Image (cartoon, rainbow, N blue to C red):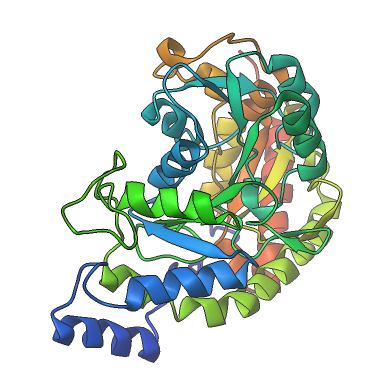
Length: 388
């Protein structure tokens, strides 16, 4: 039987453009490949920070390290605690461990973003920071998170790994906390294969970030003077050369994905039990790193999420299973504090699926294919109800 969709999906990242090739060759021919030798990395850091309305940016080797540096720059030290949401990529928590601190895992709301009330309940005398995650490219409820932070004296680190260009109440992700971290890993909206950046409006935070990512040197200090504890966590000139031209492409790509997400939502109105997960109220630009959908097994003959994913893949629609709750990650258990059940995040393990960014770079017909495949799978599943 022919699958619903036989056509492939768009390549991500897209093929390199002419400006990227020219910049890469210029770096190659210059012989100045490290961030301290050429000017590409500093130029890109400044341009990216400006694009989100921040005063300063420091490029790093990846997004996890960006989070680690932001936590350190804001005073998080061994023995401290940092609140992170349960439904997120594991790096949100491992960055806390890398800083020597303890992740405290809080549940999420129906939007899959950090629940401010849960964070408020978990904050204690050792808590030094809270890390809201702008999941899928929709900013968290930063006003409520900010109120929790103010009440408990916490720093706010935005995990904006998936939120390049996102806005909340028309304010850019990146200037909604004390520091914000973006990722340039291969699946992100802007990518150099790997990489990250921390942005902040605070000059002192910036100077600490710069020092720590540059082996503890001062910006105006001597090369072999290391007054700060630091590491070599610098991006290369090649990565910056790949990234800089992507700033000009981002707006069009965001508009394209937003249009596809709208088309997908309309198409899924015909499918009972497969509904878009709402973004937090106040989201004025969603970047659609992925489109999260809530799968309701009873509407599909009781078949579990795994069976649905396999059936959709067979129809040419490779949806993603999404995250496990951090409460179910055994590697984190020895490092966490006050671990409590997170029922919303834990339920999402069994009910949330994703339409990934490359699929959202296709056309409206592809979004209709997703709905058609879901209807076909639903029909088959209802004819053969699941039984244990």
